Length: 518
Image (cartoon, rainbow, N blue to C red; front, top):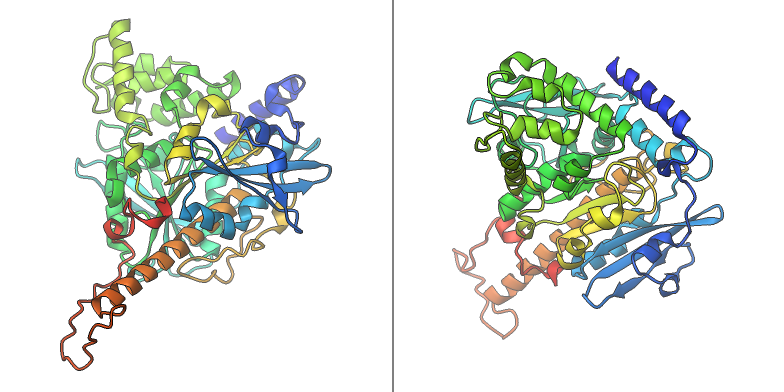
């Protein structure tokens, strides 16, 4: 009921504010994206299919590849921004979905960045997916939950621990709202042979709050224990991770703190918020801020009595901004997080706020990330804000592990397309470990979901080829293959110790000296 009330209020506001608001602009210069990135249109060379791919290296060695899909009389562009590397070249060659984006244009609600963002966040979705919950008790007796997505027609509710299907760990936004986008991603992942699992933080999505502690914005402690459980439950399958919106702060914090021990093969951030402290401080436009603050207050109201033992609930529920809520929860004396207590003066509060983000800023340990991470962003994202000030371009231009897929339009986790209802299964994305499930066909697969699945497939194939080449070279060296050395064919015990190949041996696979970082 609350979701419908919020949706109706937002729709009314949209109708009243339609003229003149900057979030509803659907017309933009065809070369706006290329011009903003400093890329000349004449540098691109079209092929017969209309796909335009150009490689350009600037003074800092950054590489930008642009793919243009023509719709009506306008050319809409998707840019892949990254540091030149072997993996980047492989992605450009094998990820056809990156250049196959046809956004909605003209006077339709799907062409509005604001409306499609609200639609994906609030509008109900009749999904054929059901969830089986695992409540995980943590080391401090707290509880988090993993919701495993299974088809509604499947009689067997539990997946065998011997399954080799890849696991897709989905991290929702930091407010705990399971959006339409998350449900559609679970449906699409199931149709391509993945085992989707949604991570729910303490007190989120019906998870009981058993301790006087809530998870801080970028504290990956709980997620680390959840990943260990997944590895224990599904030891034979690869693990991939996807985060939505502000939930990307938790995923990036986890990947940075764990480094090469993350047990994740590859990760994708959908419409991420990178500079989170500035995001909280600058705030959103008032309809969005009001809706998010109201939703978070309603979720916390059920714990008002118990939270009153550690924080000032009056200050919490009288806050009218996201920053005010975050400060009341984690930056006051006796907060439910684990930050040190501070005084109540404005100077001490400001110092506690800065200290809080020193521990929780998602990019604080970004140099330690050791796996490929794809970020899918839109220039007209009404939640994240202006691209130039909110997207760290220098990160993607200098770090070989990070890739940015930047579209001209798409809103926040929207990315609606002209033929969304008829593109399911058209991209040819195949799971790296399993064939698509019969009977579980996705209805109108979102373009960003097809792109991330193709990214997972391409990175998996690339690493498999790298591993085969490495083993072949080692076998030749061990058997004297290049220098006329003696080959021992009649020994009862092999002179070459064969190390079993394990897809989870992150230390062996993701080394900084790997060729994809060249």
